[in-house]
Length: 64
Image (cartoon, rainbow, N blue to C red; front, side, top):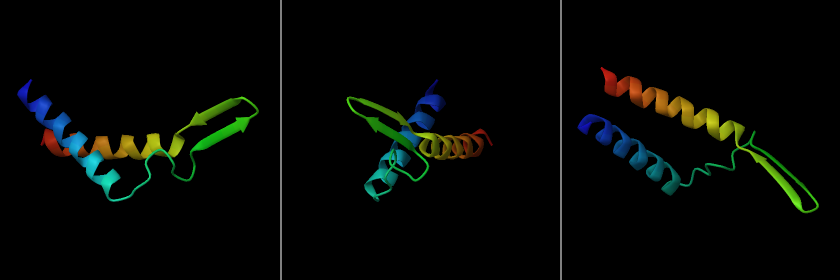
């Protein structure tokens, strides 16, 4: 359990550092935003892929 908490903490710290450096997570090219009248739809497709790749690499690194 302790190791899991450390990994989660490191992941949160990395995401925070990336956002502080100015990477616009949630507004990347490829994210779909549709606004029509009073209805808006947002699908963070590219952001989801980037976060998934980063988490996969981090977890693979910490498993070794």
